[in-house]
Structures are given as structure tokens and as C-alpha cells.
Image (cartoon, rainbow, N blue to C red; front, side, top):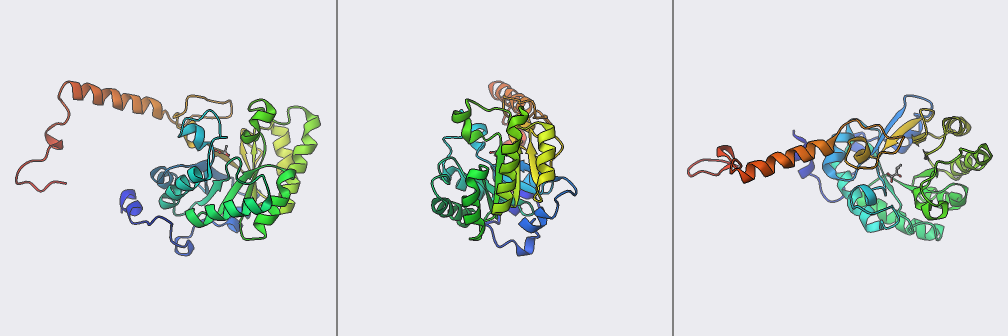
Length: 288
Ligand code: KIV
């Protein structure tokens, strides 16, 4: 069965996961210290479908504001954006654990508001868990959500939603005096019930200390190999976004491929070589 027909059979909200052997939160947690966890972001059904077999977790991250919607940062992303992309990813992914990010302004005000918005994300997308940025200060919210049936992935170190306070995207923990706070953040989110924690933009020795300090999987982005798993933004790793931070490795160059295809298409249209014989409907022929 082609990926296209698999996708077209799915409804707006995915069916229960029981039959599909999807990665569960407890199985994800059990990989702590074992085979590294493979995670990527995904924002559309077809990309999710392509990545699904190759990943343990797909994150519908709020980086979609930048890499899909052309925003200058993630602050303008809304709950509606996250739900719409989350629904697409759930239609495309069958086996990965799908986690949807809580956008700026949707969870910070109170644990109750966080629950209201996070439960909407779970109900309307069918995803299994949410992610939110924040360390010790978010522990009461993480506790409130996890005790009410919402698994939470935390996000510490460099937190892009904090960019106005920090004055930009700053690597965290270059100064050893900051380490204690970040390690404390990791411990507090674990104690509050987070099932995993994204560790972004920290030095290798700090990443190692965090990973060794907690019993839940650390998922690194710009945080070295000393984490229990890795995540990258899909558009960054396939060359679909112009900015290439130090921590990104490009595994492909889709920009070149798209530009090449568009150049050839434009050339063929202008030369009247497209559409050719194979792409034209004819009389008395059964074609699609
Ligand atoms: O929004 C996102 O893509 C993320 C990853 C950087 C982890 O939070």
C-alpha cells in the first residue's frame, strides 16, 4: 500500500493507538541509558509519514512558526497553528510517539489554563503528550498536568520562548556558575512528573551532568552526544531553512532540489515542452 493511500484512509483525528503498536510514553522512558532515541520535528502529514518508520518520536514544535510560516521567532505561534499541524502529523504517523509543543502564552499563566489548553491539544489532535518550555518555575504546572492524564516533555537550557528576556538565542551554561540552576531545573521537572526533557543549547560537560543527574531521557538539540537521544528540526537537517546554527548537520539539500525542479519546470513551460504527450488527456483512452 502506498503512503498516499494509507494517509487518505485516515480521518481528522486518528484512531486509537492500540492496534498500531505506536511508541508509548512508558516505552520511551524505558530507553533511558539504552539505544539512543531518534527524534525529529514534523509539521505535515506526508513528511510525518516519511519520517515515522525512522523515528521514535515526532515533535510538532513551535519552530513551525519560523520554518513553515516565516515568522522571525516562535512567539507569534498560536494554539490553533499547533492543533492544525498536530492533526496533520497524526494522520501521517502510525508508530512514533507524537508530541505537540505548547506555544508561548498558552500555559504560563496558571496550571489550570495550561490544563485547559493542553487537553484541547490532546483531544483535537489525538497526540499522546505535550511539550512545554521551562524548568523549576514550570514544575507546579507539569505536576498539575501529569496528575490529570497529560504526559509532559519539559524543555530546559536554551528556551527560544525566552528570547526577549535573554536578548536572543543564547547558549546556556557556558559559565560554570549557571550549571547548578540548569541541573536543578532538570531535577525539578523530573520530580514534577515530566517523562522526558529536551536539553537545548548547552555545553557537552553540562549535558553529561544533566543526563547523569536524572532518570528520565534527555533529548539533546545543540547539546552534544551526551544525551539519551537527539532531535533536530526537519527543515534544518534537509537544507530547507537558510539559517544553519552550529549544532545542525545538513543531511540533504532540498533547497537545491526544489530550485532545480522549479528552474526546469519554468524552462519547459516557456519552451512549450511541458505538458508533453504523457501528460495530456486523449479521446477514447482510460486515463487518470
Ligand atoms: O520547536 C521546536 O522545534 C523545538 C525543538 C527545537 C526541540 O522545541
